[in-house]
Length: 406
Image (cartoon, rainbow, N blue to C red; front, side, top):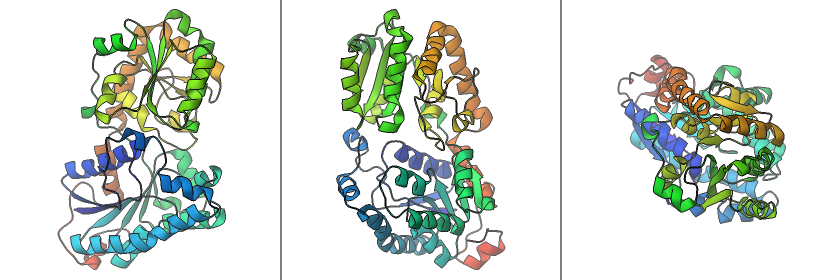
């Protein structure tokens, strides 16, 4: 099959990984994937500083009322003809699109070409960008999100709570498929930590609590530092390593200085992608300090693949991935004392913690948290389990072969 993958992102950090992995999974199943976007998927892939923040134009646009809304809407003038050209030139069988707010390009092109559109929704952007104060046209954003989803052939969402948000917004539930994120286990193999790197960071022979990602206000890293201080684990020689960078970095460093944790909390700063695995190998207890109510954090799957015991908030979207006491240590969301207790429990018995991590690793294949399984499910949702359709440029023939209405 010929699949046209369209996205309207800078493809940074987890977004880039998600895009690359699902495209690679389709290709591993024997299908052809063509990327259509303004920014190539591998553009500045090793620019860790770029990944840590917003693009300059976005920062400027957010300061001017309605300008960010207008810029997102204006993309359609470029996106629609760009996708149409690609569909006609490459004779695509269907469009797979990563959803963006006010982006009608995929649904318009799919309707005009009479081919299906699979819409991957990772966030309810009408809600999220209104909540964050990024956009002003709330009602228009809600209408556009509902309309775009209802015009798609299938809407892939990453969690049950996200499904409910869309259903409550008026999206047809029959179009929605819940599909958590995945991981490529072959690229995440547990490795012994580098002793040289341990010595260089001053953590030789000590337990390490860790987080990897970009430091944004909703990631709960101050809560992690609060919990670490409350736990008293620093007195036992336990260290915290924060791998990455982001807007919250100055505030976190100020917290560390204020609470005299300089010897106990290590900031790696932004790292090239290739160096990150070596630092993650240092982590004995991996933490997801916070998560919004509808997301599906990719770092959890990566922690699982590496066999890391995980400390995470006890909320529905996380409980869809991890089982409490079996594959993770849970705490009450936003509660530093509860997180401190979970950290102490994980640190108290390293052998039991490693068993928790190993059960998490085993759960990946058992529950199908794999990109390849996700790609299969996408095809099955379109009535095309694994096998490619016969070659044909006739849209009507595709409808006769069982395609859902575009």
